[in-house]
Image (tube, rainbow, N blue to C red; front, side):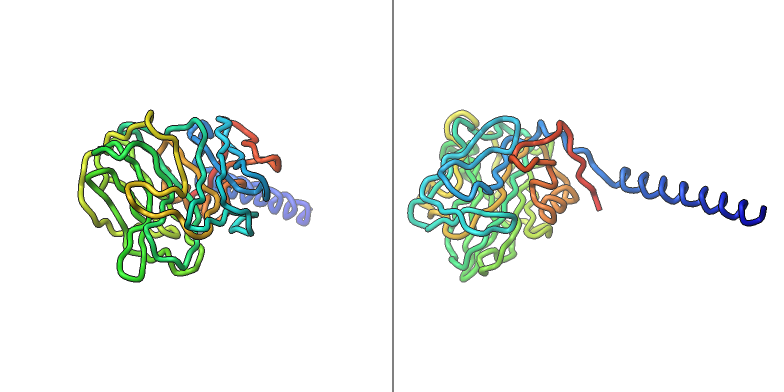
Length: 266
């Protein structure tokens, strides 16, 4: 009888512990509505000149010149720094002062004003441009509009892979309101303030091509996505640590598998 009571006691405790773990994991997760994904390129096709969009929007990208090579997750694109480019065909970006997040991986030893992600015309406040900011022999993550900019301090042109995230929070209206992250680290804000009113009608989103006399991207580019919300650092870290496919619940065919994905916030 004593042994039976001990078994029952142990069984109850196992249920309590299991429930507690499930509750903890659930409470430490943030649901990411996959409708907030504007486009997501995994670059795992491995060949061809089309980057398949993993979102439900079917915004496939047109690749010009860039080659497939081994990336952080699967394969990525290698840019030659001369004329390679990627265009999100028919997609013109997030406009006005709407919140947004852009994430991507990059690796290069070439210190230059790499053109990463951009849309909008080169007009005051209307341009939206994520590029490298050159500081001596180093380059930093930078976002700018015509008339203002915001850049960090960590060197991202050291020949190592770096994950970068550019977040424009809800309720913001100027370029220095952005939060910039390199490998999960919030960057110190430098630059010149300027109001934003991003034009989302004039120019398709491009990744690599020069703009306003800057330079083509040179190096390796992987797992780029644009969201129409301001992701938290916890959500960005899960994307960085697990890749877009796992974080967004993408099936092996490269499409979002469910209408919701659970991103753990550690």
